[in-house]
Image 1: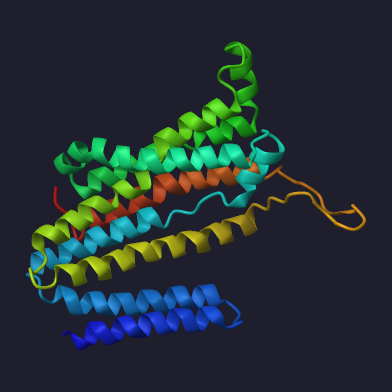
Image 2: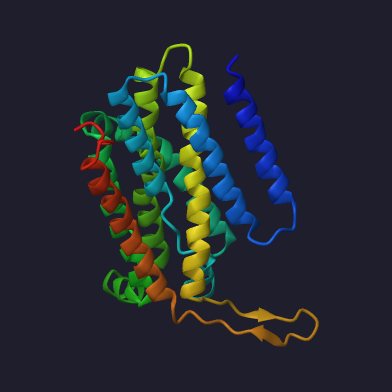
Length: 277
């Protein structure tokens, strides 16, 4: 039994749940920073078991994937716009969710040859470019592209059609990036510690989702989008709907989706943490 990993993991759980349960200012930030520090400590204890060249390589790979998964989303403002302005409803969102889950599995299977033939750096660059491109339909619909496309296609290519196609293309991208790291661990981690490597490194890359949540919160404080809120008793409008900055929000997220992971790849590939070619 590796007591450092065991008790470090226990402390990670207690710390996250404890701070998250308290009404502390900046609790989300405290949990994130503390969790990253604990996981990095556990990772440092694990990679000592690896040869030096492999040690640098797996750290570089984990950093690239972390940054890729830490990209912010537009937040709830986009969903509000789709409901209020495009006419989407809960049933349609459930269809999109089911479609996304199915196509994620299908996409992972279909993209397996592409992943196996290319380095993680190349995979991340291509996925980042594709992710940024897939924001264009949402940006276009904000500016009324769906009205033009519906008119030109006798109502076939309307907002819902565009959303379904976009979801179909976008769904596999987030999960595909994890596969090279997990495959690398399966191949190179010490045989008696593979499960521990999987757990710790998966925890590190999953912390990127917390980073994504934080960045989403911050960018929504810059580009403010509000939905109409009425008092239930009097029907008086408390907050008016304002989607005037949603277009800028979507464009900012698209730029970050493209620039941040590719910038990370360029930096890592020029350092001692370079991943495989």
